[in-house]
Image 1 (tube, rainbow, N blue to C red):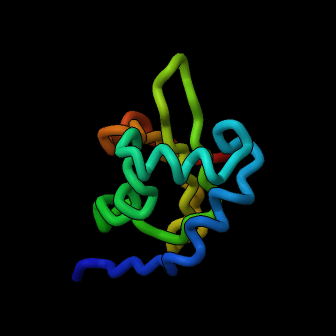
Image 2 (image 1 turned 90 degrees about the vertical axis):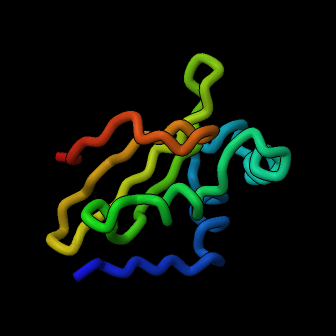
Length: 101
């Protein structure tokens, strides 16, 4: 059976807005980057996660690492384990995943 993962679309902007490490500490900048096509919407990244990697999103950061825009997403699974995923924000490619201690 495939897991169903629903995220309230109203929650995603709040997550971005509250993230203290958001690029330029500015939600509008993130929106501008999405609207200009420079990065994928966060919801697209999360929806494309395989069912085995889904859970409750607890933290999101948009980072600029040497000119490369990255989404760092923390998700807690049904067992309470926190997983951290690093995605290329432009392509949606999963670059790294690890379990948080």
